Image (cartoon, rainbow, N blue to C red):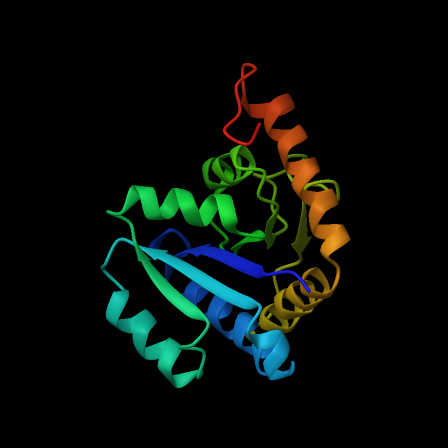
Length: 179
């Protein structure tokens, strides 16, 4: 059983996205055994503006053992999270293409909403997209993807390779942090 680490980016996905990311993770976390819970971790990067809100939400969802706030100011810590994470969860309707390219530079597959801005950037080789729906539908859909990704480490490896390839082909000039 391998570690499963989800990285999400606080204020970059706004409060609605934070709620969805935390609740989708909590949905998976609370529906597995304690043995599996010990393998799961969520990192929420924040600039500090919503830190108290995120902390309160983490406590209310009872995921304090698995969730950690990563201050934006601690760039080395953020880089370590990028390098050790399994996937990047970005439930945002905004244009997140820069965040996606950064995730791909670390070989990190992205899970997000389907959008015109992302076009062909995210495909099944490097990430997964859901259609935007009601808040509960979005939580359910993201949690299903997280559950599938947790229980299928081989799929995570394939998506990581795909994220590396996508970064090389779309975003880099031959240099990659992940290589």
